[in-house]
Image (tube, rainbow, N blue to C red; front, side):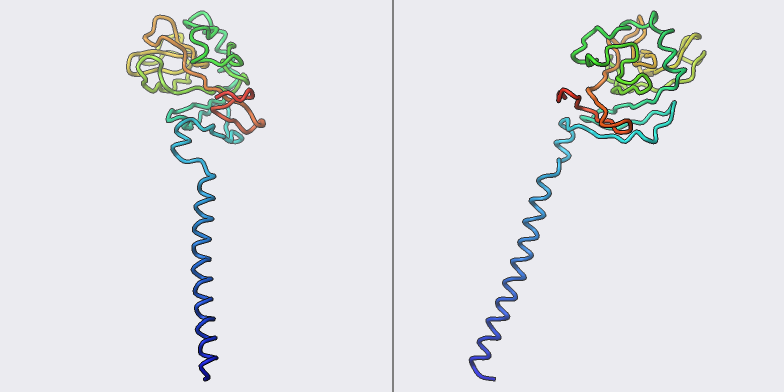
Length: 202
C-alpha cells in the first residue's frame, strides 16, 4: 500500500471517529434540552396544575390526588349524598361558605354543594383545625364518635371535628372553617384540572 493510500485511510478513520463523537454529544445535548421543557417535581410541588381523568369514578367513590403537597379528594356523590346537604344546612357553622372565601371557597363554588357540578366534590383533605386528615364516614346513621342523626360526611379523629358531604364543618366543633375547595375547572366531562380555573387563576 502506498503512503498516499495510508494517509487517506488514516484521515477517513479520524473523520468517522470525530463524527461518532459529535453524534453522542449532540444526542446528550438534545436530551438535556427536552428535559428542560418538562415540569420538574419542584415545579409540581410549587403548585403546577394537576390534570385528572375521572371517567372511571363511580357514584359513592372517592379518589385522592396530590396537589401542592396536599391530598385533594375527588368524590362522586350519589343522589342521596347530594340530597343530604339540605338536611345539614341548619347543622353546619358556615352553610353558605362565607368565612374566608378567598382562602377556602372560590366564588363559583359558593353554593350548597360547594362545587361546580352538584355530584362532584373537590376538596383538600386537611382539617382546618390543626391540619389532621379527616376520615370518610359516608354511611349515615349512628356510629362511634358520630351523632345518631349522622347524614354522612367526614370525621377528623384527632379532635372530633365533623364535616358534611360538602366539606362544611358542623357547629360547635374545633375546626374554624369548612374544608378548602381548591380552584379547579373541567376540560371535558371526564377531565378535571386542579389548581387552575377558567379565569387562569391558581
